[in-house]
Structure formats: C-alpha cells, structure tokens
Length: 353
Image (cartoon, rainbow, N blue to C red; front, side):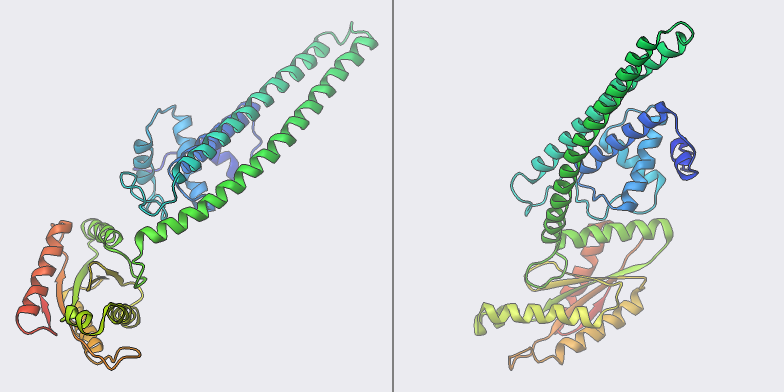
C-alpha cells in the first residue's frame, strides 16, 4: 500500500502556521497515539513516536474507527519494519512481568488521557470566553464606553491568567506522568529481556528463537532471502551430569554458548532450545555453507577443554536449509531428523537434510 498523505504532518514538516481547529486536531492525534502506545507497551522512542503520529494522523483525517488489531495491521501496510522491537505477542503476556505491571501501564495511560482531555477542554473554554469578550468589543467598538472597555479587557486578562495557571498546573502533572512512563518502560525492557533470554547461557530461549525463524521464513517468501537452521546436541551430556554433578554440567552449557558466540558471524542467531540442545539460524546461508559452519563448530567443541576442568565433550549437528513452503514445524522436523541421524551413526558428526 502506498502511504497516503497526512495533511497535518505535511504542515508540521513545512513549518506552516496552524489554525485553532488544527491545533485541537494535533492534540487529539497525540492523545490517541500516546494512549495506544502505552496500552500496547510500545516504547516511545523518537522513531516510534514519529511513525505512530503519522498512523493516527491518517486515522483521524480519514475518520476511521479501528480496533487496536486493525491499527497494528495499518502500520504494517505503511512500514516494512516490525511495528515495535520491544513488543511481545499480545496473546501471550510475559511470564516474568512484575505483578500488576500491565495494570500500572494502563492506569498511567488512562491518567494521561484524562489529563490531556482536561487540557483540551480547558483551552477550549478559555478560548471561547476570550473570543466572546473580543467579539463584544469588536461589535460595539463605536458605542462602547471607556468603563465597559476596561471591564471587557479586564475579563480577557483574567481568562488569560486562569489559562496560564491551569496550563502550568497540568504541565507539572504531565511531567510526573511522563517520568512514571519512563520508569515503567525500563521495567518493560527488563521483563522483555528475561522473557526472551535463557538465564544460564545468555542465548535466546526457544520461544524467541522460533519467532525469529518465522520472521526469516517471511523474508524468504517475500524477498527470496535464504537461511539455514542448525540444531546441536551435546553428546552424552547426562553422563557428565551424573559423573561430575549439575554445577559442572552448567559450566559445560555456558562454555558451549561461548563457543557459539565466538565462532559464529555477527548476524547468526543462537539459542538454547532445550536442556543440552542448542540451535542456530544462519541468515543468508544456503545448505553447503551452513554445513561448513556447522563443521567448524563441531571441531571447536571437540577441541575444547572446558574452563577449569580436565573435561572434553563432543556435539552432534543436524543441518537443513529453509524452503519457501516450510512451516516452523517442517523446518524443525528436517533438522531434528538430521540430528537423529548424526547421533545414530556415531555422534560427533554433522548431517544435513
């Protein structure tokens, strides 16, 4: 979809003076945008703010009545990038999110919404009063007495003073709400990190890893951008735990994660997807190159003496290249079959399907 023009945004970019009605429109855009972003846990970065302002400018100018889900869909029509890098699936709340976290966010969103409405109504009321007095002076300028003129001017000044006082009061309250939102956004970043990262190894967990595969499958289908999946299983890991104990087993897992971080390219995505099972996405890599990378990792594991221990281990690798017709389950199934074959035929091997 070609991005339609947003008249308000165009005037903002060109520094064109606004009418009073257009100022009210901008305030309503900001109010709706802020409420939506906070309600949907979207971090208020400059880039996000600018894009969502455009979306709500479009919605308001076209007089559309959309649900949150429809608004997110509209964003995807306008922009290629994900609508928010710190947004989790709305159907699955964070397991690690502090109790009452969403409620706190929603309460602040409602408070800001209420406060912005108060500002809009206050400005409207005072402007109406000022306008009434100004109109009276204009209409009666020939017949008005000096006393009546002074009284009208005094009333206008009084309204302006009230307006300034109200605005100062509300500005202070809004600044407080803004600080609350910043604090809660910091909490949200922590919650997001905890929900997506394996606590022991620092790699992604399975949930976030699967979402990355779905995103890359979309890239493969829409932009023909290839990628491969590698599943890795440490050989005889149960024996390590039984012989040396679980603390030693944890050390081996952390060392394995370090090997992945050290030997993989910067764009590779590594995760711990099970007890001793790891997985790697290799964006841009076709099968032959993925096998080469997996073989390099296999040798690195085989030659590693694990830190502080006179202990060595090996790993088996299953490799597959994604196909445009793949589902998440199908690509995992092929890689799992390849891994099973590597285990069955002697371990410490790389097998590709």
